[in-house]
Length: 158
Image (cartoon, rainbow, N blue to C red; front, side):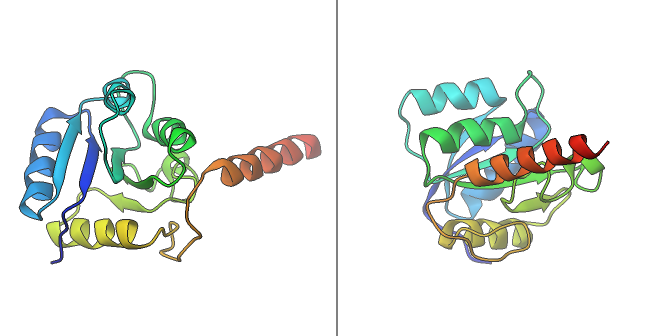
């Protein structure tokens, strides 16, 4: 199991899960900035706190989901690495590639070794949901525009 020294902004709305993940991340050597929701995470970023990776649940309480949070953060920091997690990974609105807009997804429940591997893959090289390298800096803008064009053309056919 390989850890690191980077700083991770960990966004998880379940207090017990957030505490557990924070302990796991710290045991791997990472510095952790925990946030209970997207609003708190955006406030942390607005304060100028430095972090190397956004690790966020896709489904968050509070009106802004993890995908929307990532879009806002990547718009402000185009080179920011993102790793999503979800316990609903196989439900259609949260399927890999849909909710994650191409960023990697770690499905819950996961083991510490899986967490460590996905973190290193995300930090060492930007990868898409299938694990293929993508050019950095990573931006979701191209994925968003492609998604919107596809949905618009699908709507025209109906």
